[in-house]
Image (cartoon, rainbow, N blue to C red; front, side, top):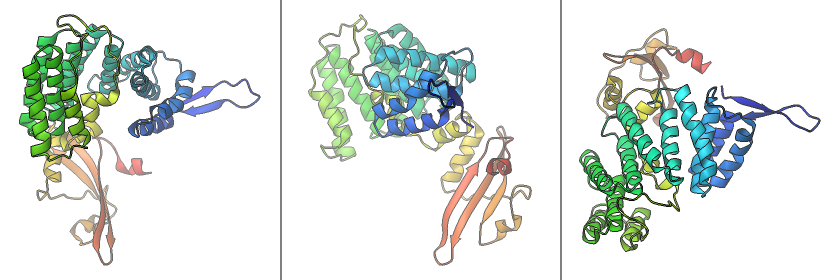
Length: 369
């Protein structure tokens, strides 16, 4: 159940209860729709009422602070954002292990806010730690890991460590290309950022080699129209002038116009492996993840019902699925309860299937009650 904060009121009425978890869900929906002002309007009562004490943190308030920090930074209110990102960062360290989704999200946003507020050394250090923790959870070539590594390179460039930044992003791009193909949109964004970095550092010819490669991938491989957002992004970067204020070896003095949507980690398209690791809080290297990839790949898989979980175990051998429950036992990982619910139309056959897999030790009957 989500947290509830009680706010005192000067009016002759009962205390006003704020549903923090509900506010977080609504705010995130506004962020997903691109309405940052609406997101902040939802979160403002929550964060005004909550004591931002990271020594005794509330998990829902920590999530609210993280979302508010990203929105505020994108709207240019960077120093207001720093209060909330710092709380979310420190709260997550108390609430969860560093590889938990809450900690990873909070730390990525805090690194972004540190970069925006010109705490560049701290931003670089935090990105380094987050990349390591993402690698522990999603693997060294997982999409989230490589995306954060690209953001780490951007922070290094802002800190004046240009050679290290371009080298890291170059290696990240090639690792990404090897894992996901040359025409993957995220890789094209990395190529484009490499062009921008080299342009700022005075490497004009090399910069346009990167830009030309990115444009060719958009037009020849993906066959994107000129109006496509990715194609426009590449062309705009290639036509832009270099940053006249950039001096290699010297930290930037400002980072104007930063937006959370421009982060590589904000545009990650999670695959099955990443989604499972996120949903069940297991590492991407866990044998369970590989097993589920096999199941979702279309390979024939045989499941045996557990009478203790299934409403009717005989349904397994019937042509009508109905409700099936059981355990998926995987060596080296654990025993995962699962349920399969299906609705069958009288004429069209199977029309809907929902497969739910639960964390080890969970009781699906209790969760459904």
